[in-house]
Amino acid sequence: MADPSPRLQAAQTFLSSFSTLSTSAFSSVLSDTYTHTYAPASLVAALNREGYDNKEAFLEHIRGVGRLMTGFPVTPIRMIEDEREKAVWAWAKSSAQWRDDVRDAETDWDYEGEYVFMFYMDASGKIEKCIEMLDSWATREKLLRLSTRARENIKTRTGEEFKWVEKEET
Image 1: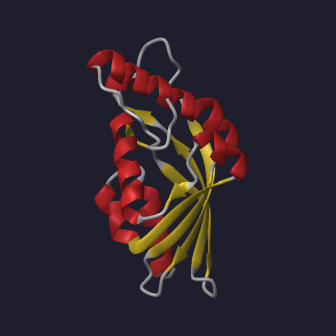
Image 2: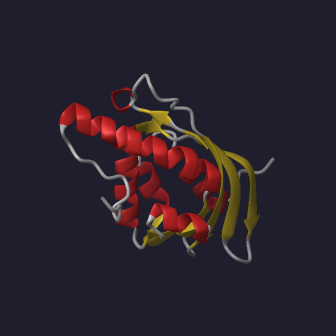
């Protein structure tokens, strides 16, 4: 079997980087003009964030996730490459690995979701754009609530106010 193409390798590296939330691993496959868009629109309103219009903003988001989680493993279920479009689509599942210091005994911290990532690459094989289709129900009903609880626990324990989503309203 042939080695995966550079586009598939870049998409696989992006997805596997969620396991450790390593910004250097993400950065290694992102173009300097990288943008990240969330969908569907019905959930984007709940997130109060459409995405990230540059690479550094996305990496800052990953750093923020790392304040709450040790990892967010994303496992591909199916990946499809479109050579003409210089694109890779990945259907994947995920789970959250919350940091011990943000958890409490009163909350069920289990989270699993499904996602579709649409990656578009530049001529060098780096990811130029990602459209991430979020698991609407799991994100709204579980992930956002758990992240709010984790931030409340940080505030209670340290006094620090921490916002995961930059445009979040108080």
